[in-house]
Amino acid sequence: MPTPFDVHAFSQVVAERRGREVHLLPKTTSAGPCGVWLAMPDADYVFYEQSTSVLHRDHIILHELGHLLSDHDASELMDDDVLRELLPNLDLAMIRRLLGRTTYTAVEEQEAEMIATLVLQRADRRGAAPPAATSGEVTLVLARLQATLGGESPDRR
Amino acid sequence: MADVEPPVRRTLAEKVDHLFSQVRPTKGEYSYEHVASAIREGGGPTISATYLWQLRKGLRDNPTMKHLEALSSFFGVPPAYFFDDAMAERVDAELSLLATMRDASVRSVALRASGLSPESLVTIADMIERVRKLEGLKDEPTSTQPGKGNTEG
Image 1: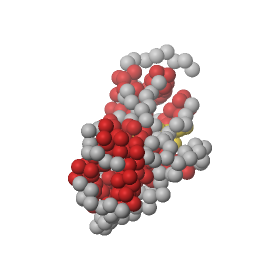
Image 2: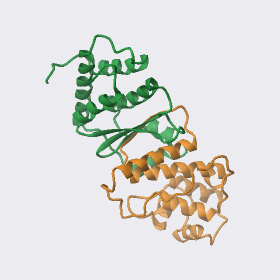
Image 3: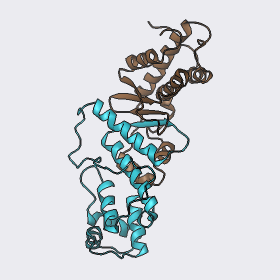
Image 4: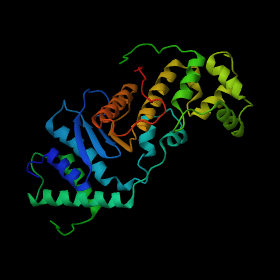
């Protein structure tokens, strides 16, 4: 992963390690949320607002990837809060009835943690501090990931 | 897509029909008998399967408030769906997105937004459709009629 921070390379690492493709797609409209992460059965898609600064764009993408990576906190994939935000006028019980309940498996949780560790290790090797091109909030997300994982694990490469 | 057009007026029959076709189990639709029983068991008014069919066909158009409340409750929409066209439009946008999510087997959604407009729901639904196209037809759609085909919004 090169410095300065390259979000596409970052997502490639994520994809390779997870064995699931990660597609970064620019939104075709400025309407709606600036970043959306969709987890499909076999791949992940991150939509990002492209008519903004590179820094902000990277921030948006990294936020979604961070969510993807650290989402082991969620006990259900379809968080109630997200559902209420998307579908505020529909009854939650009905929504769940239609969508069916799904949960992360322990294996997927472990995978996410491993990926984040590896990525952070790589980012770390390039220099003590995050590159200057990284925005403050990007640094924050990386730090949050690191905190979530709690320390380093041995380099297995 | 619709900008600031006034909500489309729809008949009661059309709204009932829409609920049956949008809010459904994995295959097919909820039968009138199933809905009638569920309403009765839920402590709602006595309502027959035939009556539900008549409502949907527009053969009856003056149900009581309790009937409409029971019906909206079963389908998980607010009663205002039947009276307020603006609310009906919002609910329809949400039902459409829900159907898209279910048909596309979306496992999880996360997004950054502060407040979502109805327009946003369309945008998200469009994203899901783009993903479906990108993935090709790997996942065969279920044998029920596709949830999309909504041309509204």
